[in-house]
Image (cartoon, rainbow, N blue to C red; front, side, top):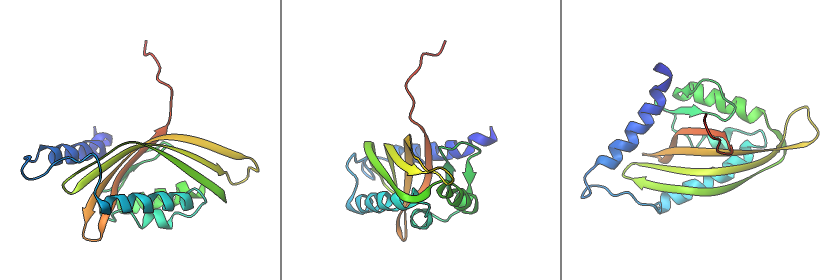
Length: 169
């Protein structure tokens, strides 16, 4: 149950934001201008990330103790800025500085009060350290943002490899 806490926290944040009265807050499927600017910065920073440079992505995260990261490489969910920062450094080190690219397909974006989320597919092309040939990965990603005094910041990201749906029998 302990490993589910980050997900329960993120879901509770979204439910709390959605449960606010309609007079106080409304869910917008088209994000505000500040969030649109953040998403552009985040996309640009991700290109650097997939070239082995994590700093621009890290600068867009909240540095608080309640941030979480469930990365596409698997493993335990990183909790708190110290763990998330280390995980981001490690993940970015898996990509060689060799013109890595990222193409995004937006699925859904919504804003409700001080929280926002995006659901998207990410298609990355990169080189791995020690391997001369290029590689590619396709991810399903959900990212949650919170409006902080500095502006919108990432507070949770979950990515997994894009898979074909399979019957469970």
